[in-house]
Image (tube, rainbow, N blue to C red; front, side, top):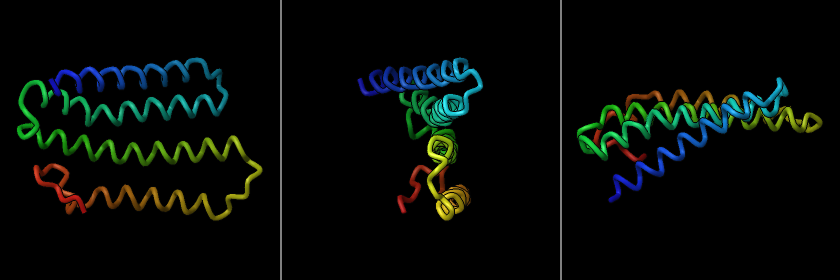
Length: 135
């Protein structure tokens, strides 16, 4: 039952977020904020797909323990795309509220995003292991 319900939910989520992102892109008429929201939505859905599609396949066909490598790589990709998603949201904030003084915040956000992506790439994360460390 979990496999069926989770597959329905995840399929609905992926189709909805990517479709909404594409619609926003098509209707943005080259306006920057709607364009960035559309890119953010498509990025979020596409990034999540790298984890959710192997998960749905594993739940319904081969079992989670037999699809560890694909699930791990998917989690890595999802982690990186989520970081980019949040940086895009920050860029939307900058465009929407240009009068705000973000002299130190912008370099901090960019630096933290780069550090996060680098940390995600370390082999100690053991993304493809069935017993990846929580720390």
